Amino acid sequence: MHHQDFWVSSGHHLVDRDEGGGLVLTDDFLKAYLARPELVPPPEACPVERGLHAQLLASPRAVISTDEIALMADEDARENLALFLAFRDRLLAEPTLEAAYLSLVRKGMGGTPPLFIQHLTHLIARNAFDGVSDAHVLRAAEGFWRAQRVTFHEGSVLLADQEAIESHEHDRDHSPLLNMLGGPAVSELEVLTAENAAGYAARSDAHDLVFDLTDPKQGRKALGAAMMRWISHLIGIEIAFEPVERFFNERFAWFLALDTDGTAIGNKVWQGEALSETETSRILALYAFTLPDHPRIMAEKRGRRAFAILGSGADRLVRIKPQNLIAGLPLGPDSA
Image 1 (tube, rainbow, N blue to C red):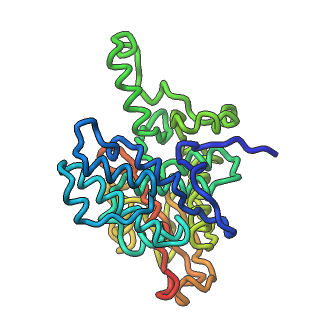
Image 2 (tube, helix red, strand yellow):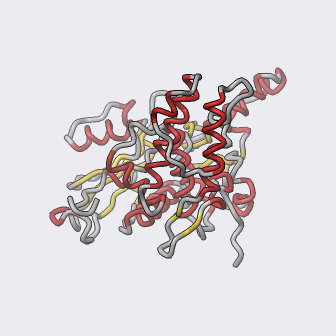
Image 3 (cartoon, one colour):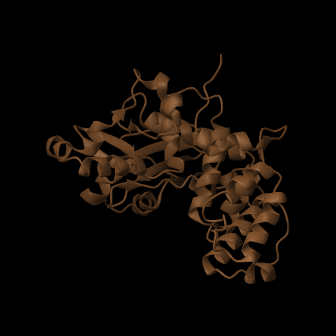
């Protein structure tokens, strides 16, 4: 069966794949960065900036010294080029982009601009989900690199792409009639359903479909399947996440939080503290799972029960950190 391409903007056509299915950096991929407005020298740029850019376009892996960068007249241009080269070098230091991502997870992403992390996540996700035809799983996974806005609408928990809904609201603010008639902006965007799922791939780069997290078959279950696929692709461990409504008196040996708010709430649950109504309302998804009997999992944690939690902020935004799904696992010291 021919699968339609999706998430084309990830740039997955610009990279190669190795025998193990990992992504391999190419000069074309690096040139796409050099074409970004932050790195293209403006007409008034100094000769050094123009020269370095031309050198990199001709040879994207060229070694550029900090002394050369220091000779560029424009401060922003110096900073942007230094950030790009640092990121490039971290990618070049590993055999695959997946390995580079895991290295960033292990050593900390602090010095890397969030935009670069989002690009890398998008690209690796496109590889991890290659061949997946379930539109709900794919739409859930978009939250791994794109912020989502939560709306509680008629008993459902809806996740809309933050950028898509902001541009929609911007259009609406400039139309008095729409503004007068409109309910919440999210109600004017289409919700992904079994009926329109077949059209997902073709419009997946527009990020204009709303995800219903409360759909009994396709909501939290689809996000759980996306989490499983991500972990399996990156570290080869299969974990089945089972959506639960609440915790019964189960004893947990571990927990994973998908975001900062989830971490704060999860810590309270872990310590046996009661949650306030506000905190409870910020829990968007709960999962129970068993830590697998896998050599990379710490021996004493194998076979133990654990939970995973997705929260949301006071600003009603969901910012999933997919790196937590890797960094948060009890991996043995030699296997990270």
